Structure formats: C-alpha cells, structure tokens
Image 1: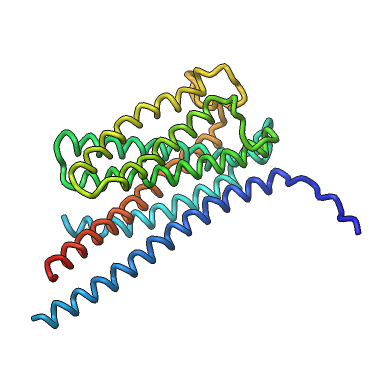
Image 2 (image 1 turned 135 degrees about the horizontal axis):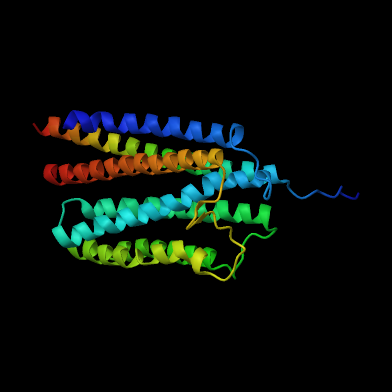
Length: 55
Length: 228
C-alpha cells in the first residue's frame, strides 16, 4: 500500500506552531510554579502543626 | 506599602492577560499581511518581542548582580538568579520561534552562517552555563559572588548579539529597526509595540511570582530550622 504524498506545511501552520509553543511554555511554567506553591503550602501547614503541638 | 505590594501582583497579572489578548487580536485581525513575507511575517510580532525581553531579563539579572557586588543589597542575588532563569526561558522561546520562522521563510531550520543566530545561541548557552556554575557550589556568599560576576560578564554579549545583525555582512536576517526608524507601517508598528509591552509585562509577572516562591521557600526553610 503506497501512502499518499504529504504536502509541506503551509505558512499558517508554522504561525500556529509558534503561538502554540509560546502558549504551552507559559502554561507549563504556570503548572510548575503551581505545584511548587502546593508543596510550600503543605510544608508550611506541617510546620504550623508542629509549632502548635510543641506549644 | 504592604498593601501596594499585595495588590501589585494581581493587577500585574490582569494587565499582562489584557495586553496579551490585545496583542493576539491586533496580530491576527488588525496588522496587514506583509507583501514580501506573507502570512508567516506574523511570527515577527512574538519572536522579536520575546528576543528583546530575553535581553531585558539578562540585563536586569546583571543589574541585580551588580547591586549584589557593589552595595551588598539583600536579596539581589536571588533576584539576579530569577531574572536570568526567566531570560533563559525567553531565550529558548526565541530560538524555537526563530527556527520555525526560518523554516517558513527561508526553508531551513537554522543558518550557521548568520551571525545574529549564532551569537544569540552563544548568549543563550552562556547563561545556561550560569546554572551549572551556581549549582556546583554550596549555597552561601561564595556562590552568590561567583554567580554575580558570571552574570555581569554575560551582559557584554547582549550589545554584541543585538548589533551583530547590523554589523554582519550576511543579509539573510531581516533588519527592521534601522537608523531611519522602524521599517514597517504604522499599524504594524503599533501591533509590535503592544506585543513588546505584553512580553515585558509577562516577564514582570513571572519574575514576581517566581521571586515570591523563592522567598516563601527560604522562609519555610528558616522556620523549619528554628523549629528543629
């Protein structure tokens, strides 16, 4: 079975790719920072609990 | 003063979102299609502002490094680190978006003979090595001083990289800003200015968020040591 020849990506596909790359990078960055903030929130809650327990 | 700082981040984030939305709307619905490059010229409105923002990040990082070495400003070392980290992220985006634009316009992903591309890659790799240096030394004043000196050395590459396009004999890379002003129409220039403001604002927002995270992390570590 012979695959149909694929045409090269057109200009608009590169433009979409560029804007998607930027969007995904910012999204990934926000995700990383959000997970870091969650970790800090957990650590801080542990420390508060420890401080309360120890008086 | 605390109140001003507290409202600064949400206002900054909202402003950045508005600017980014305005920039995208202008790029796709207002700016005319370039007669020479066609539709792919719309990459310019994100690629160039991202590149300029990465220069601004490295410059800001170097300024904070100078403040650390000169005035021993508290927190300047972390601020320099965060700015350079942001610069590397924007630098990577510059390389990726530039490569996609090169493929769309020139038919190749990369041109080694173009001084602008190679010098930007050198600048990017130089600041990537900053992290290797920083994390190879134990935290403390020695690490902060070494990182600051390295960040200051790197700033020399910024004008070289920026001017390479004008000094180069290779004319494959388009020159938009010449001594006669921007070589574009009024609507294109307005779109570019909004996109640049959006990128600088994005940097300011991400910088403040990451810096806040670093400061909270340091406070949690200190608290843990106090409670141990």
